[in-house]
Length: 223
Image 1: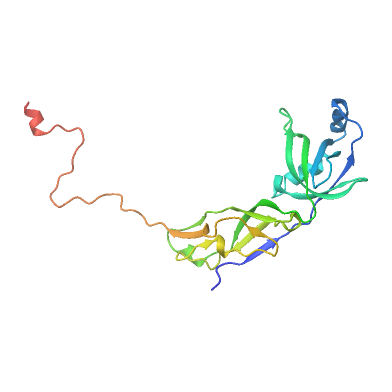
Image 2 (image 1 turned 90 degrees about the vertical axis):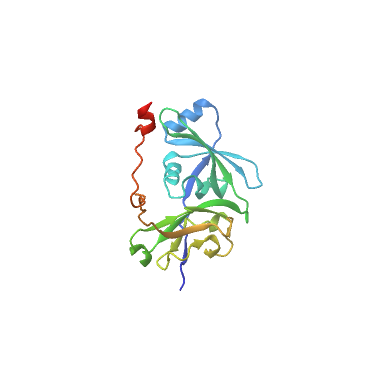
């Protein structure tokens, strides 16, 4: 019986529109923030860096997704084209807690990146109905290498057939073409253990008297 199945869920890629910056300095940065935008700098991809401005609400919405700061999204800079990017660094205001600047990494065509992808367990194993049975998820995210467009939002593992005799290991996981798992194959992903109630009171030998800590011995009383 198969213990698991893997479903790779790819979300629709988010596109953020931006405008190339022509003016610089603290004054211009303040003006952008007043208008709900923040400065961004785009690096990498085998080309020169580009300074632009994007809506804060759009970038903040990406950070609120399940992938968060690891989200790969499309940045559409007017007059420059569309590129896949990821957050490389962010500057946060110490008082308001809002993002006030972001550095974005741009990817060249065919370039692969390492990403941490969350693992979701699905299903109700019959073995969990046994008294004292506990489900252990030892690995909650896994490192993968792939092109940004192929990065899964998460990996769902069907554990409905899991028993206490076997565990799910990294070597059991199957992912789509072009995705490499960068974890040790023998690493446990999930398992079921049965916790038995321990016999906490040690049994005394027949006729033996329990020792009372702090009670004087007969020899000590006679001194």
